Amino acid sequence: MTKAFEMQGLVPAVFSPMKASGAVDLNPIAPVTEQLIQEGVKGLYICGSTGEGPCLSREERMEITKAYISAVSGRIPTVVQVGHQSIPEAQRLAEHAAANGADAISAIPPNYFKPSSLDVIIEMMAEIASAAPDVPFYYYNIPSVTGVQVDLLRFLEEGAEKIPNLVGAKYSHSTVYELQACLEAQGGRFDLLFGTDEMLLSALVVGVKGAVGSTYNFAAPLYNRIIAAFNSGDLETAKHLQAKAAQMVRVLVAHGGNPAIKAMMALLGVDCGGTRLPQKALSGTQLDALKGDMTAIGFFDWGR
Image 1 (cartoon, rainbow, N blue to C red):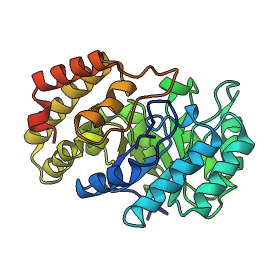
Image 2: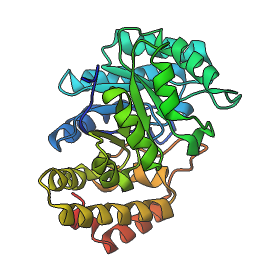
Image 3: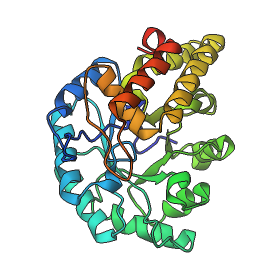
């Protein structure tokens, strides 16, 4: 079956740049976008977890969305994450994304009051997606963060009957057999965007074509080499490079995860600022330590 909408290649989950004061800074968005396009990315995922969407006001999310879509200027697809604790707010974000030319939207489920059943999740996503009925919709499955567990295969199959613009899911989870089942469901109808960078090769093996990730912001050349090696049948090279990526991710996690990932941009000359609380930005000393450990593993030699 032909997919209604499909994204292929690397899709960085882009950062929301911040000033030292903690205010949103739109100025880095254009140069960051240019750099990513030059490095061969195939789309942008805006205001997701890496983009600190849940920590931003609705107005800030709208400003950032508009700035990225403007910077892209139609050259690659854009996906805007519109999930919110308030369904009406999520609908407003979806409407705004559609009005500004987003190619697709995506949403995490509300998770303060967690949905009590699959039917409730489908109902919520249907309400959000209906605010932009002509824009492809991806459910954002990241249970390690939201605490919302869902049988994703059932969600896709049953949700497709109630969400006309549902095209698939962003799969930020590590259960590869579930990922494969979703990819193969209904003749390959659904598009699964894989969201666990350190397992990209495993996802490629079961048929993933597009991947959304935080480390693609500064290591896209490395991951593009993994994809190229896999596509050419050179599995040994792909495995070697994927091991390098996993080594890099281990260092980033040891230095705090998302704050360290965002801080990498400053080390590479495109400063996107720090993270907003409750994610504590790295201090100067911590940034130096991160640089030291990334240098020690050779990242600046093989990661770019």
